[in-house]
Amino acid sequence: MKDELVASVVHDLKNALASLISSTGDIAERAVGSALEFDTGKVHATTVALSQRLVAFLTLYRLGQALAAQPRDNTPGDFLRELLAGLMLPPDAVAIRVSADEDGTPFWFFDDYLTRMALEAAVHNALRFARSEVILACGMRDGYLVFSVVDDGPGLGAKGERSTGLGTALCRAIAAAHTNGERSGLVVLRNRPEAGALFELWLP
Image 1 (cartoon, rainbow, N blue to C red):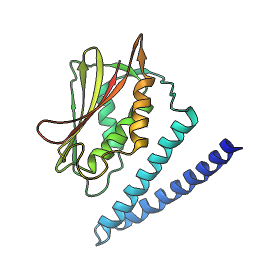
Image 2 (cartoon, one colour; image 1 turned 180 degrees about the vertical axis):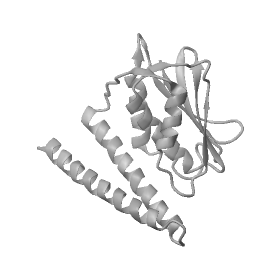
Image 3 (tube, rainbow, N blue to C red; image 1 turned 60 degrees about the vertical axis):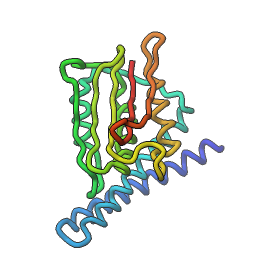
Image 4 (tube, rainbow, N blue to C red; image 1 turned 90 degrees about the vertical axis):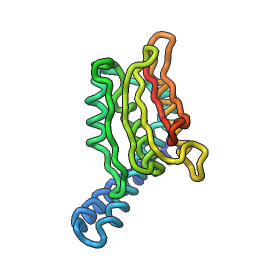
């Protein structure tokens, strides 16, 4: 009964948010060039972010944080560029650029849906604190494919929450779902010596 109730509530919330995203998107589009362009764009971006957090919650709830990755052949550089192109960003977002080691990582096997979910959460988190730029990168390290999200904000431990517990739990569950023999994925969060924070998703 409990699971059925949760599923019913989440289903209704998803439908309501989908309708709200469509409505706020239409309003934001009509407001382009007007005094309300910034405000309507921000409302739309916030609604999209709420929908993404609901999907993250539903993913963890349904699977009990024991996700099963379904890896397939991907080109990491192309994957990051497609991810960036599909992001719904607030109108005041700082610049985001992709830095990919094309020669060192021509392809890799990973679950693109789960990996996209983790990186989108990391990017949106970085955007809240970045001063001028967020960098999406990928490359090989110690036999792992490492995706990273770098910002030039105040760093971890600064005033304000860097990440919700849900976002961190989701990213760690997604990393752990990727295995190769005895190795499994992991998430690294740390400050950068030159300022800002670094998020890394290591996939074996």
